[in-house]
Amino acid sequence: MTADTATTSNPILRRIGAEAGAISTTPMTAAGTIRKTGILLGLTLLASAMGWWALGTGRFPVELLFPVMIGSVVIGLGLAILVAVRPLTASWAGPVYAVAQGTMLGLLSAAINAQYKGLPMMAVGLTTATFGVMLVAYRTRVVTVTARFRAVVVGLTGGIAVFYLISLGVRLFTGFTIPFLVEGGALGIGFSLFVTGLAAVNLLLDFKSIEDGVATGAPEAYEWAFATGLIITLIWLYLEILRLLRKLRR
Image 1 (tube, rainbow, N blue to C red):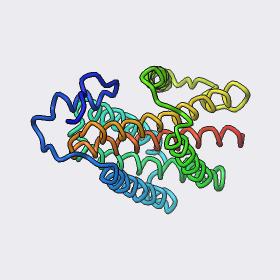
Image 2 (cartoon, helix red, strand yellow; image 1 turned 120 degrees about the vertical axis):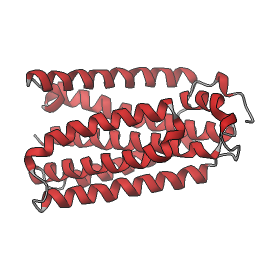
Image 3 (cartoon, helix red, strand yellow; image 1 turned 135 degrees about the vertical axis):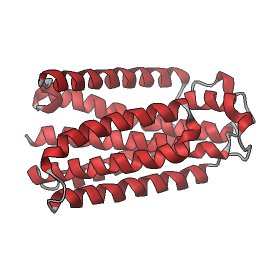
Image 4 (tube, rainbow, N blue to C red; image 1 turned 90 degrees about the vertical axis):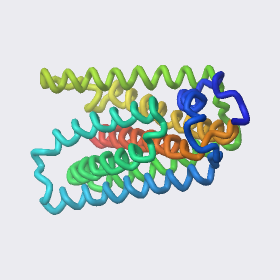
């Protein structure tokens, strides 16, 4: 290590400080992380295409769509927590996450496209554009990721995650869906705008994490963890944009 990871606010880097002695000391690079992100993104897109094709051609039973959505949430949450706690598992957990979530995205997008033609493609375009804007904002230092900034964003993100889990549990056990999560109107659209913005801001934390990892000389093995974190954020951003567009169409 070229810096002390014990004082960082990044949980993955703190974990690296504890595990660094057990793995290769070859340092990670931004290029290596980008390559691994590309691999995970490719797996996500391939699985999405397969899911879209399966539902569109009738090879996937429509009645299984909701159970698969629930299963994907459970799998995604479990793998995200695993990578955060044990970053070295990302070398296999990242690809599994990409395939599982990609399949779910393909099925969900195909179902929404049947109702609102072209909406998923619009969401893909907006996700790509948002990623580009946030990357430029980070690289030009229009926005600086400080420890306080990270703490606020992480706190809000955790709150949204807990809220989503509670709302999911309520729906599973009572059949009740919180109206503003699925309906339009000022409250519903306002909530989606806030969460979409929060997902976009999380990209800044991912960029900062990768930059810090390179600066501290984090081992090459952790490139998978940072790449997985970026894919998790991109998938979340896409889903929130898709939700927002759907509300605006209603």
